Image: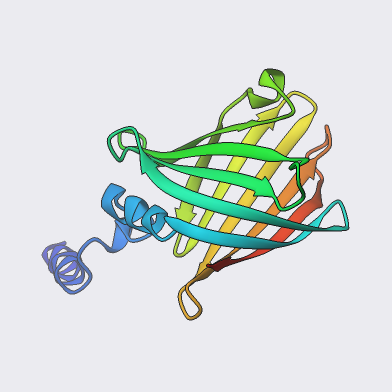
Length: 168
């Protein structure tokens, strides 16, 4: 018994925090969000059709949220959204509020998200099926990849939109 305890103590010394290594810190979560701040161009597809957006991301509300302001490049813009992403420090998760020109009814519910490395994944639990946004930060090019998927009532997800996001 004493030998087993010694091995556990040695393992804990050699691998401190190993049991919690998968859970990101609030500071780390906020640091990943900071990589979104700036002026961007989003190029990709929405429902299989080409789409290009301007994206301005700024810190707002005493730096507690990153606001993404997206507008398509057509004039006047056919689509505009404001997305607020913040870190819930108590639950160590992201909270996302997506507001767009489709109206107030589509802004409910908010999404919750989690981080895995340089990936943030948000899930909106809509009544007719989930909607999942996956944002992947590419450190090598200092850019992002956004993948949005819509789900049916069985939870099966289909590609809704896909963007490469480059700093301007």
